[in-house]
Image 1: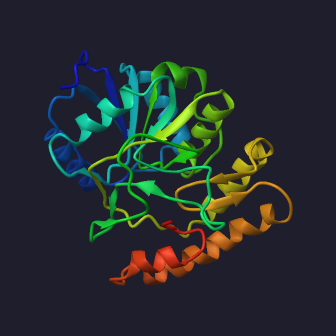
Image 2: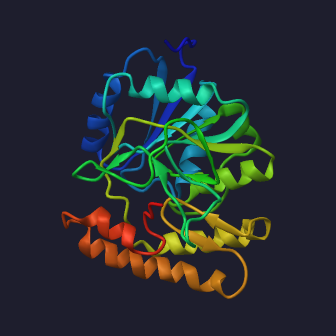
Length: 270
């Protein structure tokens, strides 16, 4: 059993659609043996310019020792799912960022690797390569990640506008600060299919490379590999964008995830 003071955990989520949030609250309310406070960030009228801005505001108000950032389209697959994630996280010594999906520095045949036990999309498909214990990664996915509030005070979210790669950026900053990031097993269903054609993803990715690329030979995320040096630095963002538009055309096909694994840089399974 997780022994924690009340509100040791602050669960923070950004809400654009009230019905999705209410379904999230219902799933969360069924979780056992975890005391938490839930901080809802209303963004139904585009009150915030970025997730970073919204999360910084919420983190200031949070009373928990640990900040748990969760997308509202996350669903827990059993009543102990959240408890077990948090137990695994707090038992890791001096971590930077912990997530439930992530990508390590190592590559497989020139492609990035996705590590997760997450179920995703309408069909609850397994994606990536499953893990059985906390595993070090370069970056974690934004759908669910954890950091200590004391560490957020040291490294708050940056001023980059937009809604992408904020967990990635926190991971890179943690690495530069000498900390390690981890992905841990989970029993979670992410309703989103995980594909977006948003050009802002490319814009933000290029900004991340500009700010941090000199410190890394490349940056692996759960959706793309980013070259940080040479000509590839300017080419790979647009390769991702084109491939993602292809994925949008086939994502409702029964073999969507099998198709994803065949395309370079998207959900590659070793």
